[in-house]
View 1: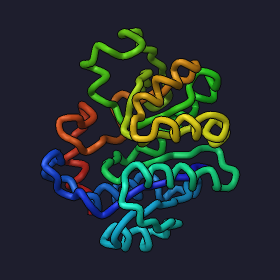
View 2: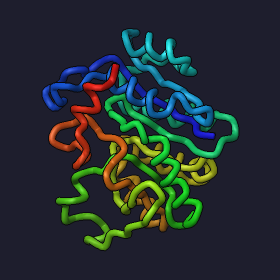
View 3: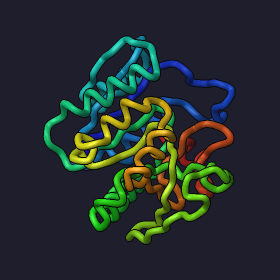
View 4: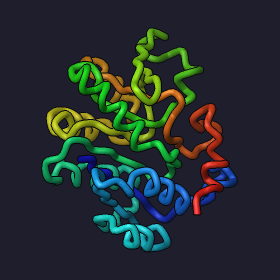
Length: 233
């Protein structure tokens, strides 16, 4: 069973760094299209600030909503992590931000990443669907270019050291060490994944990505995200 914890606010719909085709409503619809129709997925939401179209959709899609009003990215992240601690026993947790768009195969690809974790449970702990283009250009990663590549049944996966606070891990690992790390590093998730790497715990991301952070110029490469966004009803 997958517990999906979606963290959102109604602000920042059309900031200058957003693609022209982006909207948080479309992003939420792509999330639900990819995950919400699967019986193995439970949908939860942490909604911060004023009520608006996102909140209405969360009700329409039968999310379990935790309404907060801290109006803070960092504090709402802490709220979502704390919410996950209180969830009933489950297999996998997925923390999702409100500015990601997903392919239709996102759920199947995430489970593919989980299958790699099950084969290497002491090595692979975090899974993200965002193929961060930083990993193709930066020269200051801790692995110094010594990336590990794994072959799944859906796609290839590579080790990485950053996403943008959108990642999955087993509930057991989250309660064992993930929650403590995530609280300590907060919005600095690259710092968190680097600290995890120091513990021998790696993050993997798919090639190509099954999701993208909608921030120019950092979209997951290869995939036509504008086409995917425009096909969302």
